Length: 251
Image (cartoon, rainbow, N blue to C red; front, top):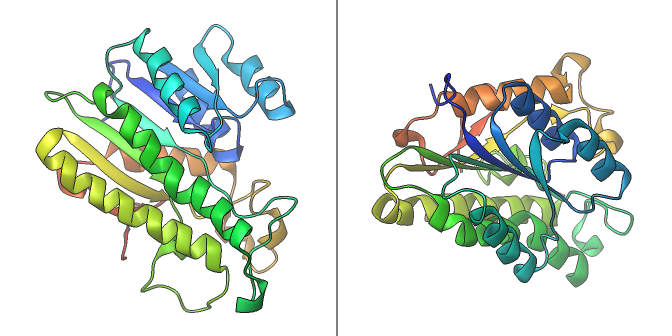
């Protein structure tokens, strides 16, 4: 089991979002050594994260679209620890005030595609790039990205949602590619994608209409499920994507 009595050194990216916040709360309760990021400490989500993590975690602002910001984050973390046991990247973009999932090809726009890829595909590999020096050679490390079942090409039966599907599929490819490289460079590092299911958060609110109540999870349930999957990972799982119940999702 990855989580045992030993305190882990853990970085949670996008810790003020629905799933990220729930995961952070669980890890704070377990007294791990935590580094948490939010887009703005002074926004409502950032202030909430600050209030629950005060004196229990290091809190950083991070713009995932800015490479310098990501680099500075890891330089700051390296002044406080020489390694991380676990990185959980909870960032993700499905929609915002200017972006909605596309229902048909005519809805596609360059800027909207670029924004999805920036958050869902490019940011995860840039996080991996700058976090590499903090992965140890001789101990188990885990790098986990929150992924989505809709990123599976073989599971795509409904179409639509072009930019989200494409960017999550690209993220899953990055997970696989990174896992192959790290087998040589950091052989005790596990790289995985995690699908939380449909979770009752701001991200999924507009799309919950067709979800049966028993299939809609609270953020706390999702956090427990994902941390349980992480706890049971072994090196043979690297490069794969797993659902909340531990079942592997095919590419």
